[in-house]
Image 1: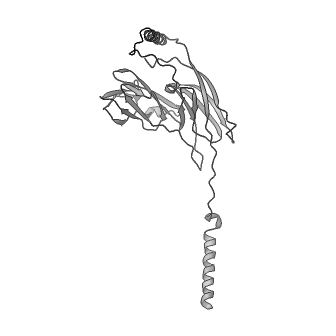
Image 2: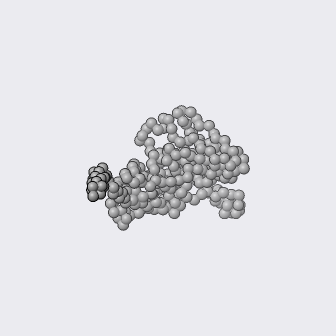
Length: 273
């Protein structure tokens, strides 16, 4: 009996120690609180302003000549001026989005790579976080020189980048140095050109945000889901903010957050020529 009694006392002691050191609350994991997230969606109704400056009027005149030449001669070599493709110029950005614990906010994702094919850019505009690497891929059959006109880094002009065929290279054109000193600057927009290819016109837009998207050609857009709160949403046309408005995502979100309906007048574009 004595050995059996000692064994029972030992088991009770071990059980008591386990209860003291590892309480029941520690053994049971509390389920993580999931924060409901809701996307901001909407549509943009955009028109282009008429030409006003001498440069814009010259571009408009050349556009009309091209259209007349195409309609009269049906020349397949005549490149008509592009229509108002919103996806090549209009971005939507949400500012000041801080991921709340415990679950992070879904961020905008974009492959930060520009493909050069046949002396043109595919696509014509890229929108990325300002700390992300920017790749350029040359799908052509010969070397090309990529230019960033007017680009200065710490006061020095950026030299052209020579790209060999089928090369994938990180191009160091992110904002840096003095450009980052002013925290009030929320985005940077740099033109991209190819030496010897006047129709190769592109642009890369770096933003201080992890939540952004380009507007589709039909005017629709959808931003990644965000938790309830107040947000500043901006519409950027290549180099300038055209409109910034406050958007409130209610606690219930779905059913209460109506799609945005935005009307914009875009500046007359001369970049395609």
